[in-house]
Structure formats: C-alpha cells, structure tokens
Image 1 (cartoon, rainbow, N blue to C red):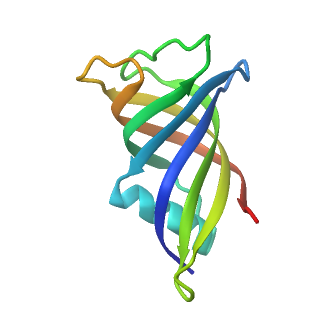
Image 2 (cartoon, rainbow, N blue to C red):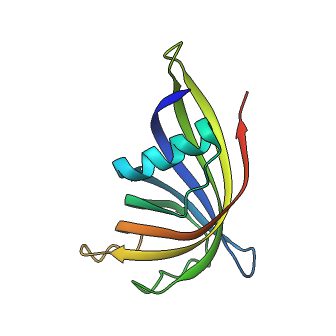
Length: 131
C-alpha cells in the first residue's frame, strides 16, 4: 500500500501530433493525490485530476501557451515518489496517460506557470514501478 506522493513531475506531449510540449513540476490537490494513490493501491482509474502550481521548466522550442479554459488533447508521463506504507521508503513510479488538459489560472502572466490545470477524460496507458 502507498500512502503519500512526493516530487511529482510530468513530461507532456501534444495528443494529436505527438510533439513534445515540455516537462513540468506541480503539486497535487489532496483529492488528486488520493485518486493517484487509489490507482496504485486498487487499480481505480481517476476520471480527473487537478494539478496546482504547474511550472513548465523545459519547454519545447515550439511551445505555444494554452488558452485558459480551452481543452487540449495531451499524452503524458507522470513521475513521482510513492511512499510505501510498510517500509516508509519512497518508490519511484511512472504513469503514462492520455487526457484533455484545461489551464484554469494564470494570474501572474508568466507563460510557463499556471496556478491550476485540470486533467479530464483520463485514459491510463500504463503504471510502472521504476527500479
């Protein structure tokens, strides 16, 4: 069983062209963390996730900022450390998924930062523990 998620990041690709968009760090809401823990612990696929403080730190040279509230088809790989309940050790996990992304907030005007991004219509492709 896994009880906590730390250090999440995601590599993002355009869902239609397959072109790399970039790599971002983020925080999970408590609800989204619970959904990803349920994915690993019980194989329950989340219908949606909310990411907070999304910082695109390795944008593709062709990066175009999304229009807030517009849906974009995306493919991505989430990397995170999941804490093992029994040992307390962090376990690196890779989650590949297809989803629609909607940027919900960008009050700073920074084209590489969004206060909130919602993932919907999630289709989990694979979940792997990385050794």
